[in-house]
Length: 297
Image (cartoon, rainbow, N blue to C red; front, top):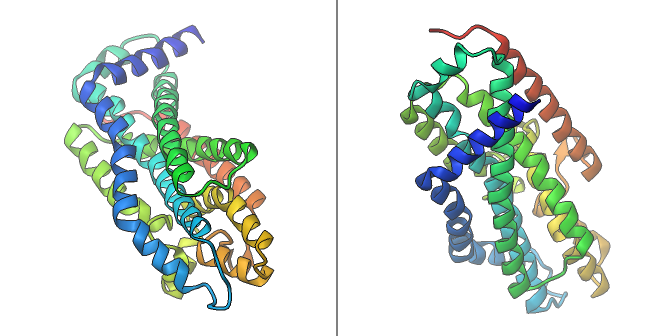
């Protein structure tokens, strides 16, 4: 256990020591929230308003609160996963710089070394994404606040699940990489594509039927839907207080992917949590398995 803690602390210190990697990880949520608020907010607002029946009156604050919650949920869903690929660069750097040769001749078992990379990635990614959460909550506060303390606690729980999912996924993907160039390429692909395949940039309900079915098999879809549910729960509750028919509120929730469908059945938040936990456990088992295999010299 002492060796494991030493490895985790060593990897975390290397992350903070590399100013470029630290700065890029910390600046990513700030850039995303500025880009989302600048370019996506108007698109989300127009799409939301166009789906509201003309006979219903909705306050500007509630509109802005809904849009801000959708933006914040999308940012957190993407950041929790993509940041892990940036943070996990230490694993690739050690192999590229020859540090792993020293580890290979040490009495430390290989799975322990790779668990050190994994848990340091989780801790560093949580630090970065908690900053993202603070920024998102500040943005929601300015636009229209309908969250409770319990909602914020649930959001933190959702983020922990997504960071664990992103960390184990990035660990598996990064395991065979040998150069920083390869890692940069993978990070770019994930950053560019993950937001689309998880339904963060555009609601899955806007895609074709075939693509919707395909995306319903991806665990990231349910991680995004989970954050949206907890970020927008207060908004939907306020709509009902203002006299919105329950069918209209459900329709709005459906259009924002809060009620994802799998093979014709609506997936409840409790089931989404179970899907994420099972996915993390399965991917974690795969990661541990591949770390026990002999590496190609």
